[in-house]
Length: 364
Image 1 (cartoon, rainbow, N blue to C red):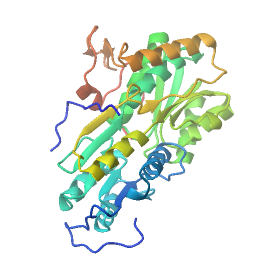
Image 2 (tube, rainbow, N blue to C red):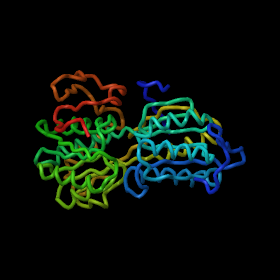
Image 3 (cartoon, one colour):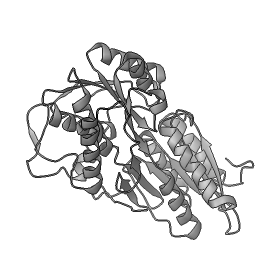
Image 4 (cartoon, rainbow, N blue to C red):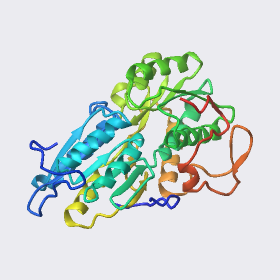
């Protein structure tokens, strides 16, 4: 698969546990299976983000068969619990460990120092070392398509956005959506509510209800459950799914979804460990790389809106359109990207401000 590197940051269970001492885990011989583990921030049945990572794990198992033994640990909180689980897995002989949430970053780096022969892969972070690689998806590219569709579909001119935690990964999506939305609806507003977590169906549903009560007729989300889509469907508002195809949760009102495709990356990186070619790299792929996809638009979407949405999709995928093409102006009125220019990766990856049109505070 095609690997795109970010140039803005330079990085610094099996049935029987293997015997080891701290820093010296059991390392499989060539004839042994590679033990690979995934740490998930939510349940693998969330039908969203963690579900897609687990599909990637299953793809590795299917592709590599008896050469690999895979294992998942679900619903691991970000913070100290991640460090504990990581240490246990390394001590149990896992030679490749994927940590799949931003809040696992510091713990991954810390534990990796104690187990230099174990390969670690951290999703959505930016800290690397000799045995820690990073990988991510350009989720914001799909937000440009969604924002374009929303510009045609919204009657109120208000979109509700259910966010998880105000980190750059989430903010860049909000901003990309808003920029595209306001190209169609210059008076459009995007109202944001954060739920302070990745997977909390109750809070996600409540946030979606509150946003609809505030006039939103479209719901977008960067959270992991289908609750916002289900809420929008029940209230007659359009919705966009997150991480997985959520059409079945909103058969008449889920416009489309951002779908994460981790499987090719996971298969490729596991093969590299097996053949000895693995190196610490940074991967950030989007529509062109096939790491992000979008299902066919809902048949209830008017033809003109669907056509413009498809054009946005094709233009972003081909590179003809950049989600952050200038001029880009923040809420204070300051120009962040001049007309004719594009926002560089480094600035996108560190976004901590809203563009004009976003309502809400940058705090959880």
